[in-house]
Image 1 (cartoon, rainbow, N blue to C red):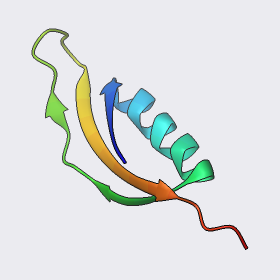
Image 2 (image 1 turned 180 degrees about the horizontal axis):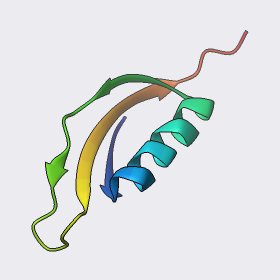
Image 3 (image 1 turned 90 degrees about the vertical axis):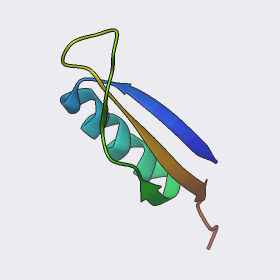
Length: 53
């Protein structure tokens, strides 16, 4: 699954941390500046369901 995250750098770091608690993160794009909001960025995260043990 590919997920788009928008926000400040602190919000993006927090969201990545929370995503990694439930999903396996296999890729993260570079940060792209948000054209409509200053100091906001967007990234794309590729995730997979976490394997059950």
